[in-house]
Structures are given as structure tokens and as C-alpha cells.
Image (cartoon, rainbow, N blue to C red):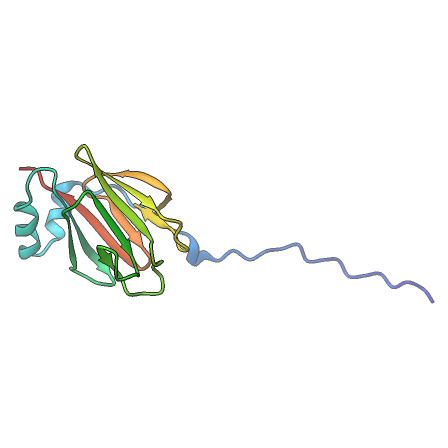
Amino acid sequence: MADKALPPKDLTSTLNLRQLRSIPEPKQNQSLLNTLSEPEREVVAALPKDAGILIILSGAGLSSRYLLDSNNVKIGRDLNNEICFDDITVSRSHALIEKIDGSYLIKDLGSLNGTYVNAVAVKNGVLKAGDEIQIGKYHLTLFVGEK
């Protein structure tokens, strides 16, 4: 019996374009403030110097506010976190925001979906006013008091 030639193996792969993210231009403080509602602007204006607040400006939880009022703020799905997001896209212990010497640092705690700052995945990073943090489907923007 003669050997039949095997068809060539398909060496192509599929690229899922939904996974691609555009990296946004950094927003200036004033342009960010202009996107806020009047009550949100008042809250940000009343922040003491170097005090931080996270505000959801788009997507899930729109207009929710989270004051960063301790040196360690843990974010995750578990109810024991300071910021709790009850959604499957968020790990039980997802990320930690620390305040050290007036600066905010973010640390991913081994989350399944990752932690993003300005659409770039981070394990550890320094945050600055205007940065957008993505935790699962939640997009939080950091505002820091200037008074």
C-alpha cells in the first residue's frame, strides 16, 4: 500500500482584537476637573493637601467615590477589603494602594485579570493625580488634594 501524503499542518493563529488596549494620553488636571459633576468638583476641591480620592468616571459603578483615608487601602471582591467590588472580574484580594511619604503606590496582589494604570498592566507602580486605575471592569481615576 502506498503512503498517502499528509496534508500540511496549519501554522496560523488567531489574534483576539478585543484584548488590545489603546494607551490614553495623560489628562491634565483641569481637563479632568471639567469632566466632573459639580458635587464631585466640590469634593475634590475640599480635599486636604496630598489626600487622595478615587472616582469612577466611566463604566461600572459610575460616579462612585472612594476616599483614600488610610495608609493601606486593599481593593478586591472580598468583603474584608476597604474597597469591595462585587464582580467576578475582580479577584478576592486584587490590589493594594499604599501611601508612603505623601506618594501613592499600587501593587497587584496576584489578581487573575491584572491591575492596569493608564491601560498598562502593572505589578507595582507609583500613582499620580489623574491616573486611571482599572480593576476588573472598574475604571477609577485618582484625584489628590492640592491645598
